[in-house]
Length: 168
Image 1: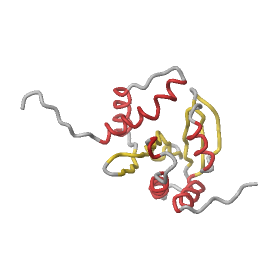
Image 2: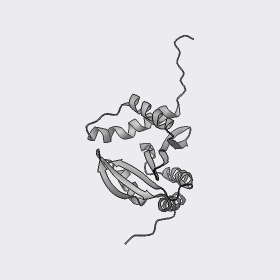
Image 3: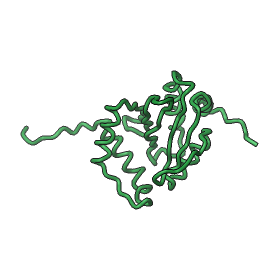
Image 4: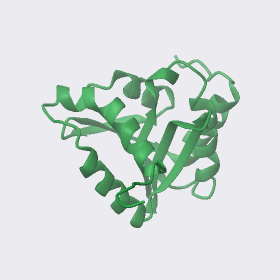
């Protein structure tokens, strides 16, 4: 059939759509707009450069993902962690973070670097709750770091539902 397009949705399509839902309000508060075409190009470039994806699906739909870069100069870098708003407050982070703990198993001495838009209170709470420490700010983003061995232990406790020890 001439002019027919495939209706097959790719993982990249799903990621861009989830990013658009989640990131539009944060970018808008920073005076920016979400550009799906640019995100698609950036994602393809990041994957070509070795970025890895951990995904979580429910009923054949992408509900959460984590994109990270393997260690370079002693540090892993989280590029993106997104959870669909319909799944906020549910247990979807537990299995995704269990995948992350397994993925980090080979790099216990590495540092994990991450960031959160200053307007993203949920992401900032998550970073703090997982034991990341704030290390600075750049381009409207808070920057965080954690030692992989320590974070992995926290992720394993979190993903199993075991509460963290109270801190004084």
